[in-house]
Length: 240
Image 1: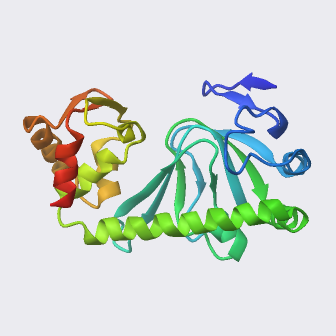
Image 2: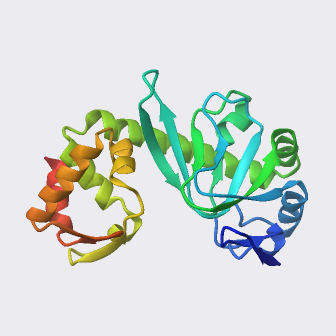
């Protein structure tokens, strides 16, 4: 059953009726596991900009993102923010801290109106002990998180220039991964400031680099729509 909220979301009130039940890695569980998960889940909706948890906060539990997107970021001592990744519907956040009992390592902020199911830490750990299949999947998810973090550090630390990082960011957009070198339309939902926070640069630099890419006929920007005209050309920039 779904009801509509002031944020325009069709709220999924039960894991049993979730349309992503069979389409997502974490949600695609046995009926018994889904019923147990549903019993300990508390669905809630969050407006754009809402904070689900903050860096260094004691872990309360995990959030399963049912709809919308969540921005994961970290802050330096000097206050500079770095966006590590955008979390899509169907993903789980807060997992490392919940498993280890150590503080959350990132801040999670709703990038748009979000529905998420919250599961308390003690309930989630008991759920894992009772359902071995889920424990194995969680181990796989933790490995994926580790690998993604490693790639992000390598991407930020070893890329030679801001233009290389921006080109790689564009090529990593979901819609840009289609095969072939023909024009591809990709949704660009991040601001230049947010893109700068993802590639470790400044908003002014990102704006200047987009202008350079357009001048070179590699991309076109139409509002929130990015047209990738030459993926091969972008790849050459990445390779230096």
